[in-house]
Image (tube, rainbow, N blue to C red; front, side, top):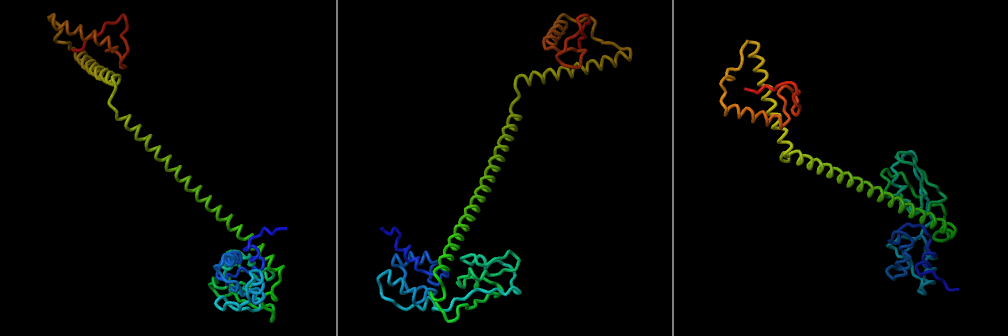
Length: 290
């Protein structure tokens, strides 16, 4: 049967999956891809030790060479230990652990699940109170003698699950941010629409009066004049006075009075009513204003 796995896949299978980054890459998979591409050497994994180099050399058909000291040295496998009396619950170690082997909560004491710890050391540098120590737990056994294939496989699964979880959290954060931006944009659009509507209403209210408006204004002015004339006539009647210009009215003046009366009736203005547009009773004569 043909093996469909890539060279990077086969290299990754031979790595201890501690995800310690001592090889210079972000994890075992990126290192495997670099070795397969020829951009990294096969002797850069201290947790795998000499046996790890021999495994990779056999796969690649290359000679066995020592571990590159720049990347570290082969050593007994350590496990992280948190001094709980000093822990301040900052969660930085939890964020650094590549296999989720540290449990706790913000501002609460943290602890390491010893069976899950790969001894990667990544939790030590970010601790602000230096409460984490790496304690060797395998005696004189180093490299693959201090680490089993079953442990490597389990660590690989936990690391992959963690990467998937972090990716999901990032996607959710991006979605929330996009939703907030969309809501803000919608609110801005609604506000702009409201301002535009207000401006349109203001422009409409400030538009020149129509013919109907002018006619209504004219009627109001005439009606106000009639009201003044009625009040003046009522005051004169109380004093026993009457109009002084009703006798010997010339034909021209009478013609003007008649024309004004006609216009007043045509416009629907009643001298004896307060509301413009009303008509006088049929059996009552209109008084002509003087």
